[in-house]
Image: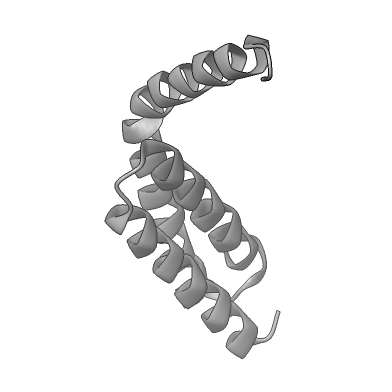
Length: 93
């Protein structure tokens, strides 16, 4: 992998990770953290040694943050499903 591509992917992962920290919704946070981990996984497996270390740090941070938000995400998503079922079951007028 070219170093410029690895660098761009890592900075993109960091940007998405920070964006996830700024979002107030647990669903949005969880999505951003998972996407950041997925983006950082490419340089983790294909880049040079220094970039791999940085990618490992970003991936670990993203996974830990996603894990910390997961219970809130599940609760938020179950509430969303209940609202969706209620609105779908309601007769249209």
